[in-house]
Image 1: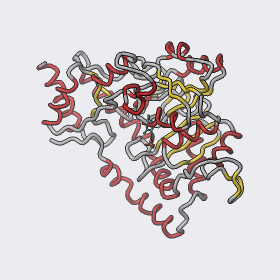
Image 2: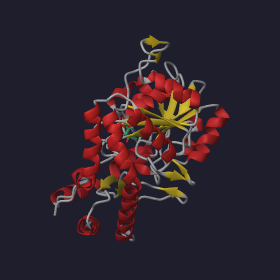
Image 3: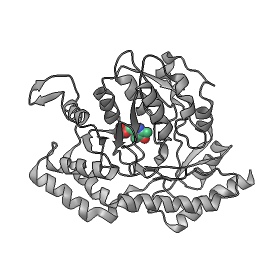
Image 4: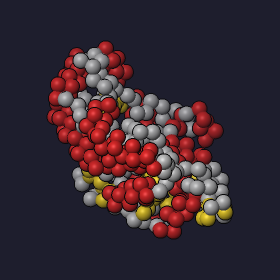
Amino acid sequence: MNVPLLDLKRQYKTIKNEIDASVAEVLETQGFKLGPNVARFEELVAEYSGAKRAVGVASGTDALLLALMAYGISDGDEVITTPYTFFATAGSISRSGATPVFVDIDPVSYNMDPAKIEAAITKRTKAIMPIHLYGQCADMDPIMEIAAKHDLVVIEDAAQAIGAEYKGRRAGSLGHMGCFSFFPSKNLGGYGDGGMIVTDNDEKADLLVSLREHGQTELYHHWTIGMNSRLDALQAVVLMVKLGHLDDWSNGRSANAEYYNERFSGSPVMTPHLEEGNRHIYNQYIIRVTDRDGLRAHLKEQGIGNAIYYPLSLHLQKCFASLGYGEGNMPESEKASRETLSIPIFSLLTDAEKDHVATTILEFVNAG
Ligand SMILES: *Cc1c(COP(=O)(O)O)cnc(C)c1O
């Protein structure tokens, strides 16, 4: 039996009528640039994430870069983040002109270890960019406390975490700004690229509105240099349909996670830790085993989709060589990149598929 890591065609079948109708409407009007659909979707995302304002942009990566730009972060500044994340987190820090400063992760949550932040703060530090990796929020209370003490901005990389909760509050509204991605494989994924920034700060939100259109406030009048980074109206209508189903889908992922947790309990398979008081949206369900690469080969033989997020810690990437990090500097990130594996978790997995995934994994670890 073949089990894909993610099957978006299955999802499309369940919403095809709604999607096709809203896309057709945009095509009829030929209104592709911003407009009422983008504005409405921004309001819905602001409300959904418990923030005052939302600004739609062209991708999650742009959301991160524009958030940094909105706080004037640039050459000579430092931004603290972790090396165990998708490239865009550190990539956007570098693109802003600032230097990414890495702190290691907590090996249980895979998120930023707040105990390691203060040692990384210098006179140049301007911001902290925690990632809510795999769909569970970073430990934001201590992060916000440290930020307040040192007068730092906190920009959440919430690309994988729309709808995730930390002590009853939603991802994106926990820091000063939160960044979402609508890349197709995220829980709320568009049909192409898209992103959004949420914040309670009206002044910064207005600034972002200007920055996403070349720093203009009035057509062809530019008071600063921004970017071309708008959310397409076509993506907005697709995402609005999907937002109506998002909680069902995220809860379905959660139910699948509970199924796996039960199947793997008492085995050598380490399952994701769910911190008390959190809502995890399981953008990825990550297991951890010592012979990860052996397990991968076994899963491939059995037709089970899987992926490594992420195989090479960012502090060891060639493009960051000039930052001066080396092997052994971030031991928990490095170890996680050798031992973790993402397995199928999407909400429309069948019972037979889930059973096949769990059985195949247990076969391998119990034989080993
Ligand atoms: C997906 C993702 C991004 C970037 O989003 P894009 O929309 O693909 O640009 C940034 N950070 C993390 C952690 C992500 O998973």
